Length: 115
Length: 116
Image: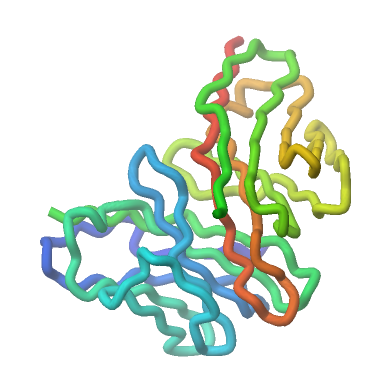
């Protein structure tokens, strides 16, 4: 069964460093998402991406964040200068194109620890 | 604004039914979802319901939607120890039509503990 994959599973970085989190969405999906879950808190929407551009972003998704689809399979989230409060589990998700494609599938997540 | 609320904990005995409740605020929500998260794992889509439905059944899972009260519930029949996990309710407040985003707004999750 097709699934969303994410790498790495755990990333440790120092405050101020740049990180890139990688996702491979399900191959025939065209909508892509990033969410994050700070320990013990709700899963929060960060950004949605379709047709090579951002369709919607939350207040959390400020100038230190960016997303890219560098090729036909990967979808990345870059955090330019990490802060301690960026420590969280980051989930990638994808769904098919079409008005009735309502199933959004999530990857296993990348745990980001900023020290 | 968009908000989803769930109770934090539920404990049941194996073989009993579990009912997990959720309230949401956005009346424009088109789809409502239930996801399951096991320890250390990602979010697994369990089931969803379209906002013009009252009920959906899928094997041991029954979803009930009261649109007037903006209340959603997930009933798990014959709950097993393997059902122990965190269950998230989510709403999709933006239209899924015309290529709009389709972001999900999640509740804080209900931790279901199943005792043998």
